[in-house]
Image (tube, rainbow, N blue to C red; front, side):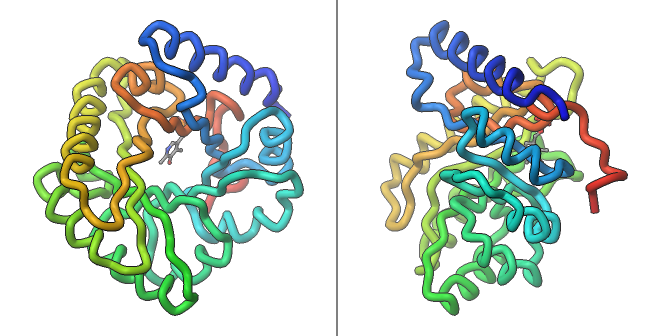
Length: 237
Ligand SMILES: *Cc1c(COP(=O)(O)O)cnc(C)c1O
């Protein structure tokens, strides 16, 4: 097993350092350990090491692993593209946040399923700031209209926005996209829509979280920085 405790400590130190440099309170930042492809024992070790939120990006994988998560946690986050036939199963895992609502279509499906189970589900709307074909998410142009439509769905509560940066050797390339998401975040907040609270700005992964924090992120999603490189051949689907 990688030295998860040491890695968590190092990431938290880095978060604290960046926060200090930009006069932010590190308590405002939620660290999400991204545990995809890693076994439940890694999740338990992260939870013992001072992490209280973790994220998975495949419903089947999460269904398989969560029963073996024995340590207490504050939030399980779903961060992958959601298919409508998996929604019902995902809800049984009681996600604190579904961060990857990337279309009005999937929001409507989720709203129906949540209604059937008599619950309201907290979500983030995923914005495809980088406009890459390979990524899902609402475009910048459609962001406001989509959020307005989703805000009318009675069993959902929009709690913020999520984006994924560019996979580039140089994380600076992603800075303008993070800045753009921050401005959409402020714009949505100013609209004061019903069922919408701009609370979480989820941006930044292992390679680009320092830049995301400088650009206002308050939720970072760290995988390889805590667990090392992923091997998709072993656990992946
Ligand atoms: C895998 C993943 C992460 C974590 O990526 P790392 O580069 O390993 O930190 C964060 N967010 C999403 C949506 C992911 O799929």
